[in-house]
Length: 237
Picture (tube, rainbow, N blue to C red):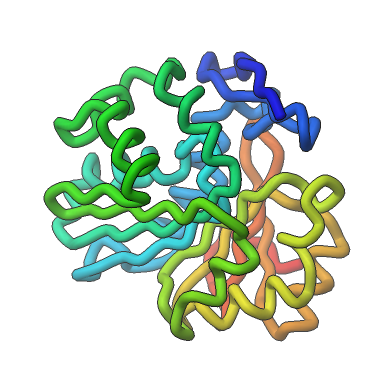
């Protein structure tokens, strides 16, 4: 497998995975914009996260680490005082070598006082990095195996951000969603960029609530919950 650098519309860079024939982010939406508006901000809008002592997040999957790193950056910028734990699988350990030289957005180059290369090197060698109030764990291996490592109702948030259903179907199957939904707390949410009707139907068959978030200037996204969400910006599907 090889990877190629691509620039997205908002100026932030991403990579193109030649094995899956997809970029890690949608170029037309912007790598940074997509990460913040489709994954990081919706749970903040829908939950009292900033009041919680601890937030546990499952990031499916690590990729370039945008979801993980921007999450830490955003919560710290909002003066969140609790602990943040992020768990993420990634089968391509060789990807980290490319990331050590990857030009991340300026905000991420030094994250909470730590150079991002230091974080990446620790994730590569130890599979984890902890600093002050936050901790990141990366499992180098099969994501389908990894989701069976956790107890039920372990997570406040799950970022469902794998390659597309057409390219990575095992991470969009009914069996997979049944497992990750069992890991979600009763008041937790799953975020995803996917608009596919087949994915929506699987989620509804699992008695989950599926809502569309309409964004200006970029494609819409979805947020999934175990209990109804009542916000004007959510449109139930």
